[in-house]
Structure formats: structure tokens, C-alpha cells
Length: 331
Image (cartoon, rainbow, N blue to C red; front, side, top):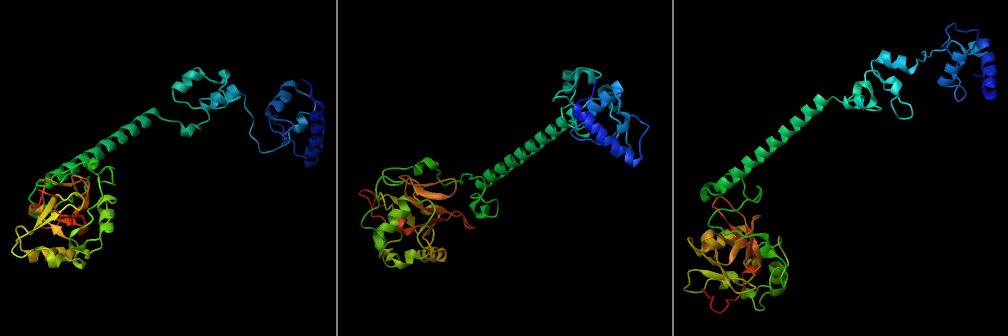
């Protein structure tokens, strides 16, 4: 095979350079570095055809001898070389390319980084065990929380917080409801606006915003003390006050029950909002959502159930229960 004109010129130039160094190698594979002119295959052709000038290229440089593909595969125990992105058929001792792939050999993956099917299987099994363990822990925690919710109200506060644990239902006598009860209606979450003439001088605009267009906010702490509630709340000769839905006029709470008026006012004042206990709730019209939000069955936002060491405590906005009684619901 003859050299091209470009290659011949390059050989002549490099011959002079190699000769000037006086360092020629007797080994036919040692060669001068000639990028973009003669690559490995070209030099192989030069050696194979014994072209004139090939020996001149045998300058002593630190390059390993190129091996034919079959010999390289035989020495490495496998073939990871590629020609055009494919494993040469002549360089796959021990089986075809498909067989090598089935055995786990991947194109372009170094020998030390080959995937071990056994390791992959072990890793998958470990991941599955970890997932099952996590699910078991969650299941046990849910069971504990649900068990606590059925316990004695006097000691319930010392156990897992219900409100913070998976939104688990509150225990009896609480009547639970689903989120749908607070779905959009004709006027926010209710069918109509709040009554115009609310008791104790409660602000109509504030009441409408909190009752019908709100799920989490509240009137300012101590707001009930700025109204006429404390002065007019308990009528002379009465033992309790009935609180009516500011939207519908349905009775929602009656207090105090099982305690004095002073005890009711003192507890409410210490928290900043009227605070009711289980026996003071009219469960015919009051519901509690899983996150503690306390509402009426008609979609009025009332406040939240915030249990303490004494049991459930319903922290209620006065503007939500300042309605006037609907006919037939004075008690």
C-alpha cells in the first residue's frame, strides 16, 4: 500500500526531526507523535506493508505498542473496544455481542464499573425492607393516636397531640364532619350573610368576614371584652347564656354549665376568646373538622377546638355566635 502525498511529506519532515535527535528505536512499534497525519491504523498499514520511511518513524517515544483488536481482547479477558459504537464480532471471544449484554456487559462502561446483578437485587430488597419498616411505623403511630383519642379526657392531654397527628378524629362527645361541610355556597361558606343586628354590638362587617370568608383567622384577642357582652351577657335571674349562630340564629352553645359564670368569664379572658367545654356545646348544630376547626352545620366558621389538660376547649369568635335567636330556637 502506497503512502499519499500528504503522508509522504509528513514522513520526510518527521524523519529529519527524528534523525536530529539521534534517538531511533529498534522496536518497530515505537513511533513519533504525528497528530492528524498518521493515526494508529495508518502506522499499522505502514508496518504491514514495510513501506520505505516507516523505520524512520520509529523514534523512541513513551507510547505503548498498539495491539490488534483480537490480541487486546485476549489479554484483557474481554473486549470493551468499540468500532463505530459497536463491539466488533471478531473481538468478542466467548460469545456474541448479545450474549455479552445478557451477562451484564454494558457498552462504554469500564471494567471496574460493571453492574453486578446480584448487587442490584440485594439493593432492591434492602429498599423494599426499608419501605415496609416505615409503613409499619406509621401504622403503629396511627393506632396509638386513635387509641389515645378514646381515652380519659383528664389524661388525654399528656398523650400524643391529636391535632398534630395525622388529623385523627376527636373522641366522644365530639361530632366530627368532613371538609365538604365548608364548601362554597351562596355567600362564601354559608348560604346567606350574617344578621344585620347582632347582639352585644358585635361588628357586622367583621362578623361576615370571619363567619363566611375565613377558615383560620380570628377576631383580635380580647375583642369580646370590648363589647357589651360582659355587661349584658348573663341576664338577671338566668343561670346561663345561649349563643346563636350569627348567620342562621340556631343555638350553638350554652354557658356556663358545670361551672360558675365567673369561672367561664375568667377562662375566656385568660385565652382572649369565649371558651366552651364539651357540655356547653349543642351538637345538633356544631361540628368539628379533623384539624380542629369548629363550624356550624350550615357552614359558619366558629373557631377551633384546642384541647388542654381539662379536655376539649372550643375557642370561639364572639362575632360568630352573636346572632339573635331564630323563631322557635330561643333555647
